[in-house]
Every structure is written in structure tokens, then in C-alpha cells.
Length: 174
Image 1: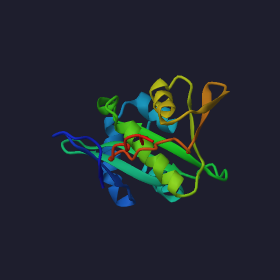
Image 2 (image 1 turned 60 degrees about the vertical axis):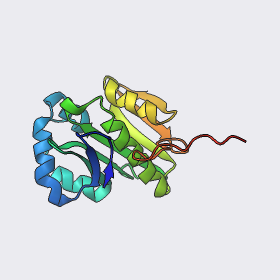
Image 3 (image 1 turned 90 degrees about the horizontal axis):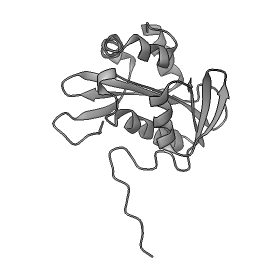
Image 4 (image 1 turned 30 degrees about the vertical axis):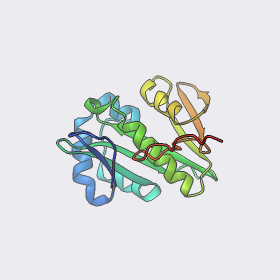
């Protein structure tokens, strides 16, 4: 488990398992239909969806001391492209813009890199500005428009370079 924020309202990342389904289901019920549609392409998530996600990728939940699960992240070779890990993120509406998604994205990037991936991929609606902004903060992406969507690729050589729980080391003075 990794702590994300240094405050009384600490948020921690932990690996998700199917046993976390009740927490994940409660989390999804707290998300707006718009947020669910942006992440899943629909507004209702079922047990089978999470089972498939866990089967094809590594998943994490971000836990808030008072609110339970406030975010879900995943990364894995879902598209089956060699060296590419696909990133999925969803943060509860009321917890957005607090750095939780970025911390999960960095965690996922470090995980993908440690598994030999060279690229993190996100396929998102071009109108999903929060997700696109977050991905752009992970590195220097290339973006290919595909109709109303963007296929965004972030090279992992620099993405998520600092662990979300550990500050980056100071630059060397040579």
C-alpha cells in the first residue's frame, strides 16, 4: 500500500482484487453518468467488467480514510501490442483535481516500465480534457485523432519517473 497525500485525509493506493468488488461497486455508484461513460463507454458497470479488467491488467484502488474507494486505475497489455500497456483511470467526481489520478497514472507507468513496457497508451474522447491533461503531465505524448477520440501514446522513458510516494531525487551537481 502506498500513501499518496500527506494530510489527515490520506489517500492510499492498494492492489485491487475481485474481493474488492463491493468497494468498487460502491465507488462506481458515486460517480456521475458522464464520468462512467467517459471511462467505460456506458453508465453501468457490472462484476463481469471488473473480473475482465483484473484478468487483463493490474488494477489499483485509491482509498480515502473517510470515503472509501475514490479512484480506480489499471495498466496492462490489453491491446496486445508488444511493449505497450494500456492505461485506464477513473476518479470520483468529488475527488478530481487533487492529484489522485496523476499519482495513479505515475504508479501505473512505473508498473508498466517494470514489466518491460516502453509505451503507455490511452484511448479517450477528445473532449475528455481532464484525462488528456493528466496523460500530458505523464510525459511527452504523441496524439493521433480518430474521429471523436484520441489515441495517446506516452513513452515510458520519462513517464511517471518519480514514484508517487517518493519525491524525485535532487538533480546532481557535477
